[in-house]
Length: 365
Ligand SMILES: [Mg+2]
Image (cartoon, rainbow, N blue to C red):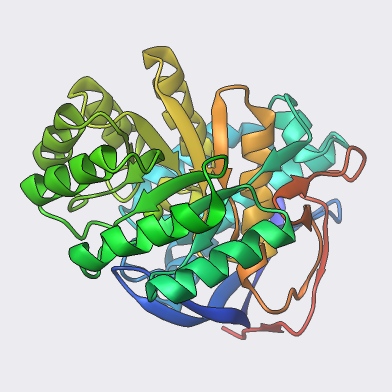
């Protein structure tokens, strides 16, 4: 199955409300769309979201990587030799993981279509749906309570609160939300690297003392400071989820070997796609470490790819695939059907099931 052309386009989608974390405030989701065409007439889709603060990629750098590094290797590539093609791509540059992920998911879309299987069945077929939490942006306690109550009303059952902008206010935020939503709702916290190691231990122990029933705390300390993450993990009762610290299978191996976290957050945009995400999952599974599948603020295409990956596998215990619920519009026709906290995948549509991208301008280069 040979690739004969690649089209690269751009879309910009407004958010329902600004997305605020300790790292950034975002008003729009921007996505780079990849459309691969095969000689036999199949069309495979992928997308990449520029997330400078996490992967270091901008729209321009993603497009540049696609045009200059990936396109020359993709045109003429035969996907029946996937192992060869992927190893060639993965060894030709470092970083640029979102750009690589967009191409990788389009490859898998095509491979599953060539067998007339939905992607989740091609990858393992364990489930055909996944459940997601909803992220609540870091805001005043009153706004976070109001957003949390709206989320429950819409049908979400698990909430992820963004924290880290002001530790003393964080206690008020979490207490206010816990009081408002009651004890049955699962609450996790994401500090997005905002705390120092000792500070994180102090803060998390205080949450524990207050009996706030926190499911896990995500990325409390800087991404590269593995020893700090280990210190936090070893000194609190609450589970610690590594997110920005785990991009590659080697990162996963290091974190697990050093017992630096309790859980791993796999995102296709960090791993470079399904090829390496599968390796991370296999390493974690062998070590008995559970994984969550997450997403950036990204389009329905890449979220659908992540949902297929997550649904296919038994050992993914939870999903954080809430981006479709944060977007005010959806220009993607097809893919996962999103109803509140449930992403359902068609049992009959082949591949990702993406039919069309509306309002996309494909670039000339
Ligand atoms: Mg995170």
